[in-house]
Length: 324
Image (cartoon, rainbow, N blue to C red; front, side):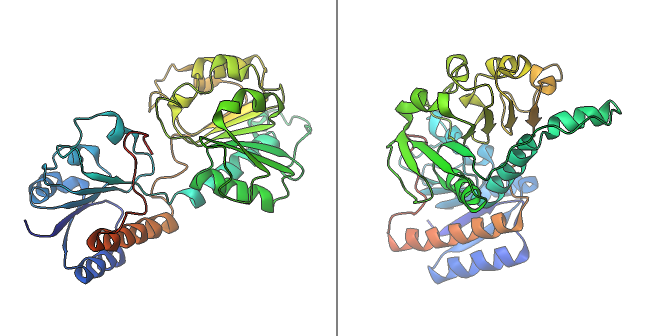
């Protein structure tokens, strides 16, 4: 087999292609470039490639058993971990692209401030052509934040919060161990029920795994104080959406901002559309809409391409059993 790479991406600029070509040439490999509209051409080329760099699941399913490494340009790779039929080669290495911390954390800061500054309520005033009246607001300065998922996204958000004067940042992860000094404390996810009653803002940035599906259940939403906000940019499966809607409409919690739902897109009659004090966005906090994200994505692929060629461990290797 020739040492070929199939690259199927819609976001690549000419300078990205040149960067990939140079990285591949330095390790004796040849990239072949396609876009999603060239699916059939990409599929045909892929049959003779050992590396695939793309973001289209249907192309991955067309890969031969000789594929050795699939680099996903997405951060979430649960789809590739939960379905054993995706890869014809069960030993095919899977890497993801943890390069979305900047763009998603800025989205999180935006919606945090919108909730603190009561934007959903002011927008309701404006839609009703009511000038309204000043409402009490909150500040990130002096606030306490709980971050469920301390990876790239959660930690980037925590750093922004710290820079803006947050007084306490608690992280929760599987191990309960701190990976960054920005956190005041890090506790295991098994302690979530103990943490929720004292939570002012709960930010969720979890992958979809059997352990995280439904983690914010009706019972756990009920543990949150009345002035709490919930933010979710991980996976919609992590939240009991019916319970969240009920808590919002009954004012059992102060508000929420969610960028991920089940299903996506939402049906026209879904109750999330009209829930009180909810900032709902259509899974746009990440993606390839920011130039920095695109550049970093390519940088990460090229760095791991050298690791792959040298027989070294891939930096962004996913444990398919864990799902991340």
